[in-house]
Image (cartoon, rainbow, N blue to C red):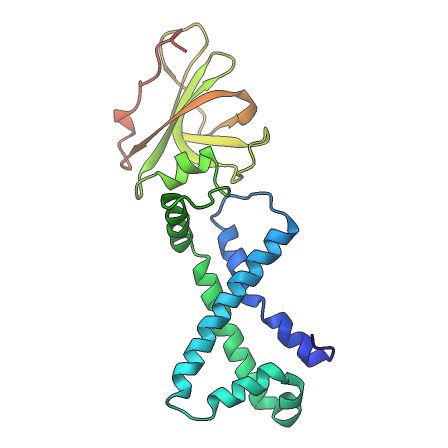
Length: 237
């Protein structure tokens, strides 16, 4: 482990791709509680993968341009000595590789690649502990650009339904989660048989602690009228 400032800075740069990956996944992945060890392991693993890609690219170029592999080897083994001799070119190489590897890490954390990886793990029996029932119903199983229609049986006996607007992005099965419904929001109060439109309001917020169960359907955008009026018969739940 280096003790000089240049060497320490160089090794800090090595984990930038993993940090970019975590930043990219935070924009679309459901939040989950992880131990510090797992967080660090994820950052290090992705960073290592990105730098392996960089090494392979350098190796391919070294077959065409002699001397590149030796230069890279010197930078990795003794960055302080190389920097003292060639500061400008060393900084240029490091910034270039840092930018390229960070872009790779960010792309690996993109929504499409992340979902493909999750489906691959599920198909072959891998770990799916980063998902929840909500994420499965609202995201993973939703085909394409379909609207997610949600019907909710409340513990009070009432039924509400509408188009999913958003929800708390958490895989923690805790009571602090909530769902936001929009579109044509309908309700059936406890003891009544008929659905009624909730007029004058655009968004309905339902907390997880009030939910008995949920039903989820997927419809093409703009076809909400086909779904309106559908609800379990009163007294059947």
